Amino acid sequence: MAVAAKAKKPVKILTFKWTGVNRKGKKVSGETQGETANQVKAEMRRQGVNITKINKKTESALSQLGQGIKPMDIAVITRQIATMLSAGVPLVQCLQMIGKSNEKKSIRDLLSEVTAEVETGTPLSDSLKKHPKYFDDLYCDLVQAGEQSGALETIYDRIAIYKEKAEALKSKIKKAMFYPAMVVLVAITVTVILLLFVIPQFEEIFNGFGAELPAFTQFVIAISHTLQSYWYIVFGAIFIALFLFRRAHLNSENVRNKTDKFILKIPVINTILHKGAMARFARTLSTTFAAGIPLIDALQSAAGASGNYVYRSAIENIRTEVMAGMQMHVAMRTTGVFPDMVAQMIMIGEESGDLDGMLTKVADIYEREVDDAVDALTSLIEPMIMVVLGVVVGGLVIAMYLPIFSLGSVVG
Image (cartoon, rainbow, N blue to C red; front, side, top):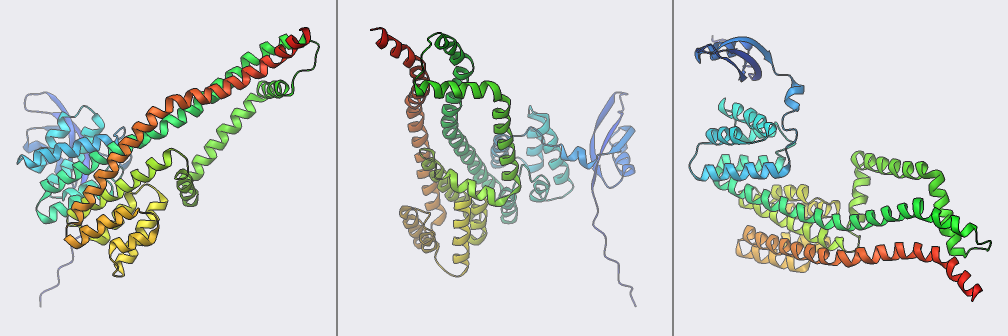
C-alpha cells in the first residue's frame, strides 16, 4: 500500500543583502531573494559573484520601504506601467525599467521588492498586497481582475486614469479648503500682533488722559492684558486641544464620523465636498465595474473610496439593498444623499446595459463642477480676506481711536 505523501509546507522566500567581488575583482553589492543564504550564495556564484558578506533583510528594514512615496508617485508609476504594457513590454521588464530610472530611492527599493517577487512566480497582485500603504485593496483587486482576464494592459490603463483623476480631484478639494483656512489664520495672526504689540502703545497714551475710557476700548485693552499675561496658557490650551482632537480622530471611529458630518455642513466648501464625493463614487464604481468586478464588490470598493462617513454609509445601504434584489437607482433614491439627476442617469445605464459608461459620464460632470466651484471660491476668497481683515483690524483701530475722538469733542 502506498504511503500518503505529507503535504508540503509553503516555501518562505526571504530577502538577503549581500556584498561580494565579481570576476573582474570589483566590489559589488545588492539584494537577492531565496529560501536560504546558501541558496543565494550558490545563485550569485553562478552569476560570477563571490559573496563575502550576506545578511537577511529584517522586517524593520522592509517596513521602511516606500518612505517618502506620495500617492501622486503611485499614479505616475501606474501610468508608466500601463504605457509600457500597451507597447508590448513584458511585465518584469516594465517594473525593472521604471524602478531603475526613477529618481527616488524609496520608489526604486519598492519596485525592486515587487519585481523580485514577480520574478519568482508570485502574481503581481499578491506582490502589491504586501505593500498596502501604497497599493490599497481596490488597486490590488483591479490588478487581480486584469491577471485573471488576461487583459492586464487594459486594466492598468483604467487604473492609471482612475488614479490620475482621483489625485487631481483630491488636489482641488485641498485647494478649496486651504483658502478659508488661510483667511482664518491671517485674521488670527494680525489680531494677536495688534493685541500684543500695538494696543499696549496706545494704552500708555491713554493713561495720560486722566479720563474714563469708552467701554469698547476697555474691553479690547482687557483682552490685550489677558493675552500678554497668559499667552502661554492660551496657546498651550489651543495646542493641547488640537492634539487631543487629532488623537481622538485617529483612534475613535465615532469622532471621525461626527467630523465628516460636520465638515459637510460648513458653508462655501460643503458644496465642493458633496460634488467631490459624488465624483469619487462614480469614478470608482465605473472603473471597478468595467474591470469585470461584480457590482456588489464594486459598491464595496466605492464605499471605501468615498472619503466621507455620510456617503460611505449611504453606499453601504445601497449595496445591502442591491444584494436583496433592488435596482441600484431605486436604492440610491432611498438614501436621500444622491441627487435625482444621478439616480436617473444610473437608471438609464442599467436599462441600456451601459452602467460603467453612464457612471463615467456622471464622474466627468461632477469633476467639472468641482473645477468650477474651486475657481469660483478662488475668485471669492480675495474680497473675503479684505472683509475679514477689515472687520478685525478696523474694529481694533476704532477701539483705540474712540478715546481720542471723545477727547476731541470735549476740547471742542
